Length: 88
Image (tube, rainbow, N blue to C red; front, side, top):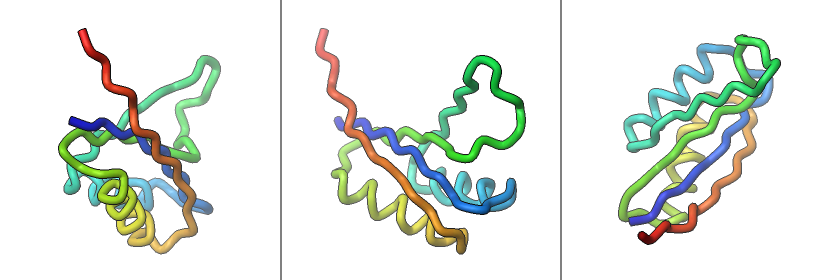
């Protein structure tokens, strides 16, 4: 089973844009990851991180991210990383 981590940044976005992004990605089995850096304010971060596990390819993940981000109507950028499996 593959695990992918993606970071998405919506440009000139507000909370409602990120709420829409969260909702659409949750329907595609993405889980949001909230990471607060030391000293970071509690306001809306300018990017969000999500995990996706399953029998999917990087192309499946890319397609889902592009569809969700484009659906906000904002310009966006993203990165996708396939996590290395850990064997015991």
